[in-house]
Image (cartoon, rainbow, N blue to C red; front, side):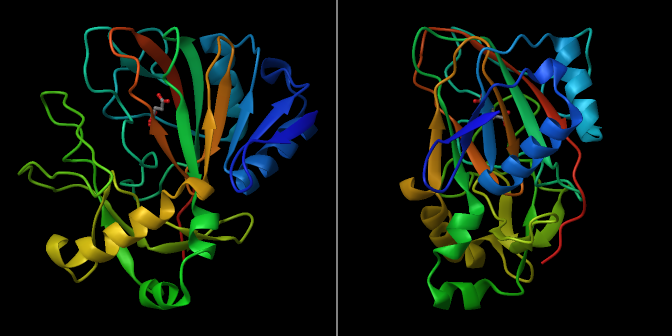
Length: 275
Ligand code: AKG
């Protein structure tokens, strides 16, 4: 197994591994790489939906996504599809999967099934690097804070997925379901401190309104999405990416109008988060 860093603070490409047949010690090595680098990318994989599910089960539990269409034969797999006549895409704004759950997802495994001729890359940003590089005054300001996360404004009954990187437009939706998490969490395995707010799903700090929360949230968002915390992956047929949702945010580029793109995602169960 060989590894190549994708960027100084985020991402690693792993070669010499067949995910569908991986041995236990390689799986443990990959788990450790993902905890540290945030996302690992594997090329030229032969990875059927059955392989995808079997591989995910070896990590632990699978979180079924309540919002995305699921494949008919495999309810564990969420379909992340953009039709060729569609304008918006799923994930076209910085977010981390399932931060609105009481026990947020550990990670996600995304497999390229149909790609546009060019474009449609995915970006990740490392929240350990983002926390580390915050000014000390900001670190002091957010120490001990908690924030509320929801998806009620994102997945509306009409299927529109609206996000901006300055904090999502709440579109007058009534926000009911969600979860409160520390603004800075400690990674359950590495102990690294991670910034755990994201533009897609984080609405307000506990004890503060949305309006009172937005200036500091926007300061944190703008800092975290800086290019130096990011890496970028260009998909090819056979590419699989596995990421840690506590350690990273991600962003699906929407730069391939007129073409379809389809990815299959399995979301991996996590554990409760603590400061
Ligand atoms: C998600 O599954 O949450 C995404 O953002 C999709 C990423 C992608 O399609 O590249």
